[in-house]
Length: 378
Image 1 (spheres, rainbow, N blue to C red):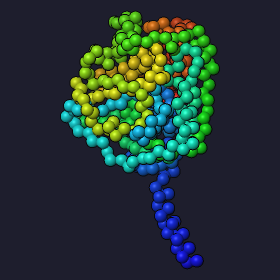
Image 2: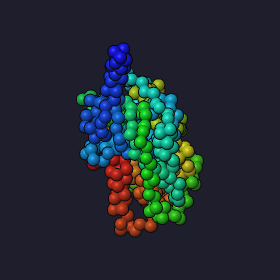
Image 3: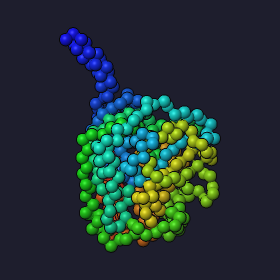
Image 4: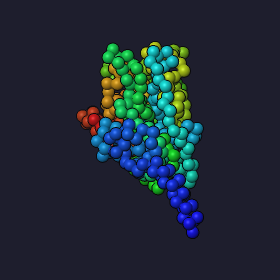
């Protein structure tokens, strides 16, 4: 009997420390103090969405500029769910500043039945009339366990002279102070998103599958259609120009795939040079950006890059997303697109809107998308 009890005590001594390493917490607790959770294994329950340029666990009650944690899979996972487009910022090879990827504990993902359901639900696209840019069919509530990476101030770090000395943050445009690298997922429940309103408004619009050709050239053409000297034309032109001329090495690289993994290389200096010492890698999921949708994605991501390079990180996340979606709408308007829907089922553009109400309706729609879907606050 003593031998059995001793064995049990020894087993508990082994198991307890391992169990104690997992911290049960919430999205808001993590966002309140990201650095306190950096490198630790956490378990939390939340709503996960995969949209146009976001892939995150959200809680709109946190009262932060960004009420979300960027979600990523361990490198090499090859999962399907993730953002449709994203921009990763790196220091260029020729940057005078140094950037070494931090040493982080490795994460091994449990690809069990729950994970497969999770990945399948979040990668299922909404299929309906018109163009719904990056729209998924479901949002998912789940309990997630993984390594939490946290930093105090996301974005670019500059010295007193304005020189870039480092980069912090995670996800699209490094807007997120935290990232969860997924280890396991349980209690998965999918909720189908209601697109009935957007489907009704987009019923006569077939623009979603048309188009093709060079999407950057299409963005330049949209700028000319709006009038190159007009404010709208200038905004769209700046987004197109962010990608440079054919053959030009301006630090912007276009890649294809699903940007859903925590790549070690993303946290170190890049392998190529850039005029201003910064690299912008734009990754697009071509399975979800058919026809004109890729041109809209170019206008959206190009706005982020143009704004960042012109002014530095002056725009807060809400303002940055607002301008990017605004340019996306202008690009649609210039090509005669009748309607445009954003993730969550919000119609952000409709030619049927009267001239008197159009500006207010666009503003209300964008505020709804950014606040309620992306969980960015003013």
